Image (cartoon, rainbow, N blue to C red; front, top):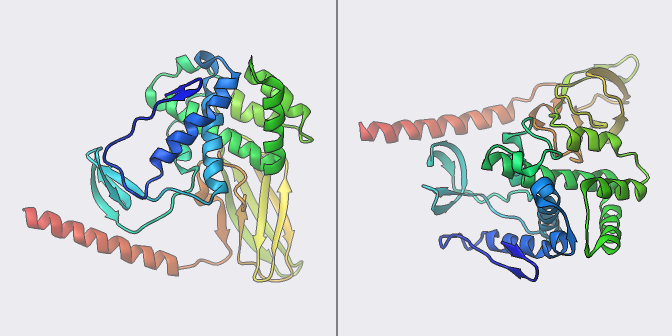
Length: 321
């Protein structure tokens, strides 16, 4: 819990030595000394602002220092076990792997947000969020993604400088989201009204998908059909990947379905939306790419792994029968 000049930390006595849980807590509470400590906001109505800012600064610190947590789960909610849980029943893991996997620093925010992606907006008053899970998803998860995506849109160095300027101008005062957006727009060359409308004002869901890809040898072009499944709009960067190059085109329209043609002197490998992951709000990354020709190697590999784990599971159940 954060207080001006003081932070209290509580964590489980059972914790993996490789976990960054304590470090993340300390940095998060320290960030609160600036947001809400020096720059205050009404947490009853706009709790997302300081919690999102503290969460964003925490994950940014980890990124700068090339730190990330490793995959783990807690058996019965208490006993930590290193590994990645694939299938569970309640809090009992049925299928899992013990390999060491680094988790991206925004992964927890994304996982939390996806649970309630279309149920509430950042503009909703914090005290009206109907459950603890929804409160965490919006106040912590979505708000962190909001600032992280803003960083990707405006450029990291530019965004950090703008935050520093905002802090120096408004420290020792109370601010609102409207004041922050006005300041941000005044210090950013890009028009951000579309972003604020789609990802702050509304609870729109974002999901862009590649529907089809076709290479046209006669014109040396690749036809790409794109569909916007969700209501939220985002400027769509579409990258055509070849053996020698990557050709990217940005489509800035809000159509539900559109077709683009990309020049390609050679037969492409495939196409991908948002190759550099600027948009953290896309709820389904699995449909962001498509290969020109079907690839079976990965499917075969994962199928064999899946059958191996199913076989082990059946052996376990068989021994209990």
